[in-house]
Amino acid sequence: SATTVRVDLAGRPYDIVIGRGLLAELGLRIAALRPGANTVIVTDENVAARHLDTAKASLAGAGITSSEIIIAPGEKSKSIDVFASVCDQILATRIGRNDLVIALGGGVVGDLAGFAAAAVRRGLDYVQVPTTLLAQVDSSVGGKTGINSQYGKNLIGAFHQPILVLADTAVLDTLPEREFQAGYAEVAKYGLIDDAKFFNWLEANWRHVFDGGPEREEAVAICCRAKAAIVARDEKETGDRALLNLGHTFGHALEAGAGFSSRLLHGEAVAIGMVQAFDYSVEQGLANGQDAERVRRHLKSVGLRTRPSEIEGDMPDVDELMALIAQDKKVQRGKLTFILTRGIGESFIAKDVDPAKVHAFLSQQG
Ligand code: NAD
Ligand code: ZN
Figure 1 (tube, protein in one colour):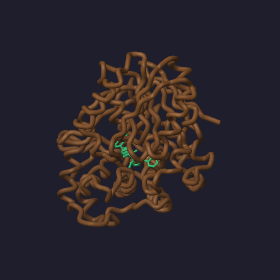
Figure 2 (tube, rainbow, N blue to C red):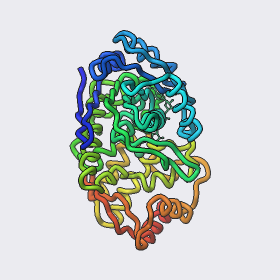
Figure 3 (cartoon, protein in one colour):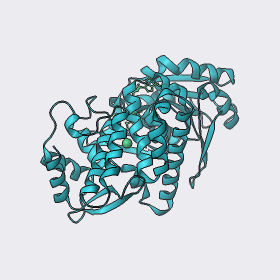
């Protein structure tokens, strides 16, 4: 069984196909879309060790040639050097305009390979095969690709939509528990943004999402549909996409404060940031405390940390955190833009947040 989510962007529509065991169908699905294509798989060492054989066998079975480029795992690979090397390696395969790049991996591989596909020969088509929960529900949807600069994360990149996203929920069985939990924060985020029903459902079913029951496929599909809808709306109206930043303003400051290290994964920072967004909204009289407590309890029950004080090691003080927040969100007329909430499923973009109030909130949080 598989679930298909159609992404209807102005340029070219494409499908996100979600299901258990889909990696074995990669060849057939590509052959159906692009008969006669040759492929170059970009992946990282961890994913290659576990899933590259299945991908290659599936392509070979459908009569599709493939070569592979294997990068070191981790955020450091989203660099200009690795990017240049991947572009050269793609060109070395003598890839043609009808051929495809396949990004087989988490968000790092997806962002890097997607950007290489956007750049090589002014744009090759590519397929996303996301292998982390975060990549399946977030980074593989929306067409943002790119790498990091010494000036900051994701500052060099391009919009480049894939022709297909194939999310095999079974490949998540090999993902380290901590990576799964971190990705789950982004899953919960979709409920908190505008889908209270989904959040209720997660409270009842999260164990099955972790266990890999059919609920996992259902959850990934709901998230992809939500992100695709927000991204499509934003193409026309501009602005809505910011809702996806729920928990990310506080979260990014914490991530930066922890030095973007394994002390605090992105999703782990987002979990704490979402609780802070709720707590701050309660403090401002926008939301009620029961909702904030429900959010905290749920994220805690899946094993995520929910307070900055739970981050081990030295963290910046409130002044430094505020400087990081101001850097991240450009301050306009002395005000910050934050995603705040009136409750679970009722988040909104607040463009006039007073930095002094945020400072006071962070100071008494501890
Ligand atoms: P990642 O790609 O580094 O993967 C996390 C770890 O899991 C890595 O060590 C990887 O080797 C390993 N791994 C991946 N799949 C595995 C599997 N099936 N089994 C075992 N190990 C596996 O990190 P991520 O969390 O997937 O992605 C983070 C990146 O995504 C960041 O660079 C972030 O900027 C980017 N991102 C992009 C967007 C976007 O819209 N383009 C959105 C959100 C995040
Ligand atoms: Zn995120």
